[in-house]
Every structure is written in structure tokens, then in C-alpha cells.
Length: 333
Ligand SMILES: C[S@@+](CC[C@H](N)C(=O)[O-])C[C@H]1O[C@@H](n2cnc3c(N)ncnc32)[C@H](O)[C@@H]1O
Image (cartoon, rainbow, N blue to C red; front, side, top):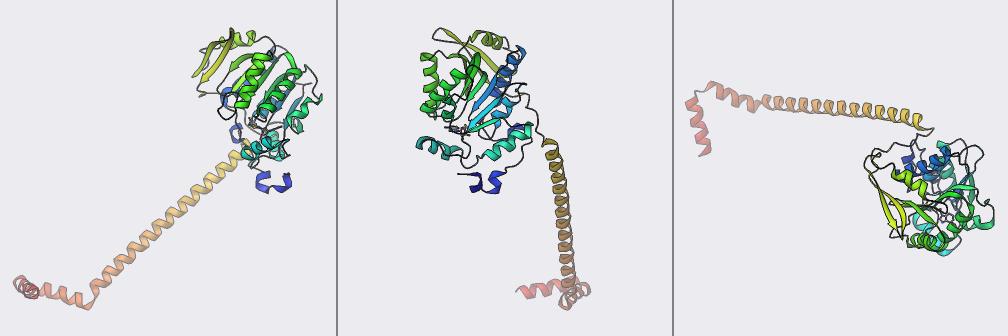
């Protein structure tokens, strides 16, 4: 499928004003953890490239891209509107992404928050194994492309080679019932290929092939500082594992897009137009109501003026009450 095959509306979705306007599967706990891991590396003076496999419409890529430092490269790999490399992957694409996803839409969303696009590889993630990524050059890799075991296992191998010694790899959907392939590939990497878990959220696994201890201790030191957020210390096969759960209520929102001010003014205009329209309709209803009650009053007055009714009233007014009651009784009998 190509961009040209899609309707204009699909190619040009509404401009996002805030990150939540970008469709996707990236929630506040993880947005904060991405910011935390990337920010922590930056504070430590660590430099390195960034990679996302599976960007969809850009929700997580926009956050990762906000951490790009001078001299670093951010690469995004996604099929977007290209064909999938096998039938199972094609079925996955049709079921979840094809209806809404185009590269044009990704680019428009990304550029709403950033000056420049990342390096885009529009191809299966297996392409990344061709040596185009410098070994050991990456500090952060997010794996969120195909959720099929064969693909995810390959993506993890690419990540292992590309990551710097203390680089962080994040696996999406490592525990969802509908994505057993990600769970299998993730825990296989842990038990057979030296991947060390750092922290788990409900939706993502954060790991490293380096030393997980410093990041884990820093995370545990934040216990109690984040309202509604639980940070717990677990053990897995003798190794420490941090888990973050609870509510992400009160999380500070991501910065707004370049469209936000214009969209706010447009929304105000729309609200003012709507209020004027509502007021006009209410006045119209009131006028109609007044016309209706005037017409009813006129009809009642006309009824009262009918000669038969006038005569009835005159009889009632002129005859003594005893005669009027006698006439009424006579009529009833
Ligand atoms: C779950 S979505 C990514 C969600 C995104 N990271 C977010 O937070 O909103 C998965 C993406 O992977 C892409 N994808 C699926 N199979 C792929 C493959 N074999 N190679 C590259 N990209 C693939 C899809 O096109 C889709 O955009």
C-alpha cells in the first residue's frame, strides 16, 4: 500500500496540540521512565545514538527525540505503508495499524514537536542487521515493532550489538496476553543471552547488558517521592528487579506542540461561535413560544366572541340564577 492509495483524510490527520493527541500505546509511567533514563545518561555526560524499532504515529518517538543531543543520531525504523516481510507480520499490520498508519502522518506528528525529522528507515527491522548501525554506538533502544517471536528475537540481537556497554533496551508488551512472542524473546534474552532486567512497568521491560545496579539504586531512592506511584524491590533468580506500578495521576505533561497556541485560539473561536449559535437558537425558541401563546390567546378571544357564545353569556348575565339553573336542569333531563 502506498500513501497515494489512502484518502486525503487518512494522510493528513488533525494536527496534534499535545502528546495525547498523537494516537499510540505509550503511557505516562513509561514516558516518565524514558525521560528519567535518557536524562540520567545526559547528566552523567554519556553520549550515544538513539533507536526506535516500531514508531507507529510517533507518540514514543517524539519523547525519545526530545533527548537528542548535538552529535547524536536518532534512527526510527518502521514499515509505515510498506509491505511486511512475511504473512504473519502482514496479518499483524492489517489487524492493528494499516487503517491509520502512513509515513506522512508520522512525519507530520513528529514535526509538530521537533524542528527536524529523525533518520527514517522505512523497512522491516531485520534490515537493521545488515551492519548499518555502528556497534556499541547507541545509549537507548526502544523495541516496539512486530510482536512476533522471530522478529523480536532478531530485534534483540540487533540491539545487543548496537548498544553501548551501559546502554538501555526497552521491550514493549513483554507481558501482554496477546503478545507471547515478546515475552518468550525477552526472557530468553535474560536467561540465555545475558540481558539484565533493570525495571518493569505494566507494559515495558527495561534492561541492559551492562550493570543494572546504579540505575536500580537511583530508582529505589525515588520511593515515596512520586505521588500515587509504587516503586518496589523484587528478586528474580537471585538478581534485583525494580517494579513500578500504581497510578500515573499528577504526572507532569509533555511539552505542547507548535500547533497548540493556534489550536487553542481556534477552539476558543469555535466555542464562541457555538455559544452565539446556542443563544440564537434559544432566542428563536423563545420567539416561537411567544408567537404560539399569542396565537392561542387570540384563538380563545375569537372563540369567546362567537355570536353563540356571546348570547350564552348574555343569557347568563340577564336571567336570574334560579331560571338559569332550571334551564340547565331541563337540558340535562
Ligand atoms: C505498537 S506499534 C508502535 C507504537 C509506538 N512505539 C507508540 O508508542 O505509539 C508497532 C509498529 O511497528 C511497525 N512494524 C510492525 N512490524 C514491523 C517490522 N517487521 N519492521 C518494522 N516495523 C514494523 C508497525 O508499522 C507499527 O507502526
